[in-house]
Length: 159
Image 1 (cartoon, one colour):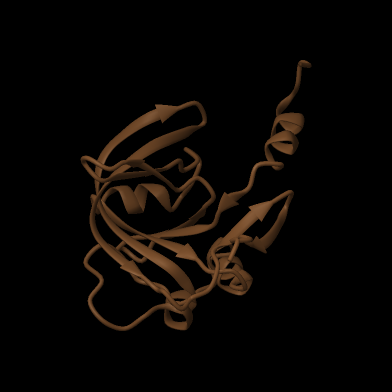
Image 2 (tube, one colour):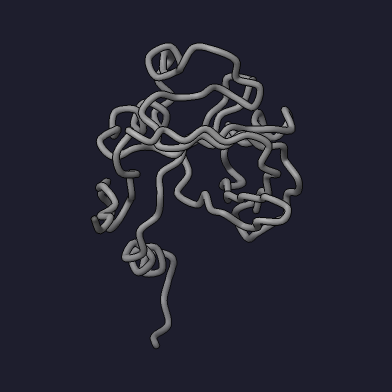
């Protein structure tokens, strides 16, 4: 093992694939995260880690709830539109119908509606725990998008 700096830390961790998820809220706020994960089955909890410098996270937090939209492979434009905060991103990628936890997006394999259960400091990020209240799986959406070594790809799932 070797000492490291922030750049080396980030480069080393890029060898670990992460999912790609857009967290949305009813305020029209959204953020792309690679830290969305299952935390607990009983009670059903998920988590993600927004950067403390995020301008979207405070707007999501104030609603007390969020929708985690897990992206399907091949949706790099959707991801880019939310990273770049394109003005009409919800009109282009949103789904019609009720969205009690936050806008639901097309191009996803899974949507998870949550109430914010807890928020804890975690270095330059915060750890957000969400109590799962609703699930929506898209069985025909294909494979989930992953981010690995600075690139988007499809998760390879054995047949």
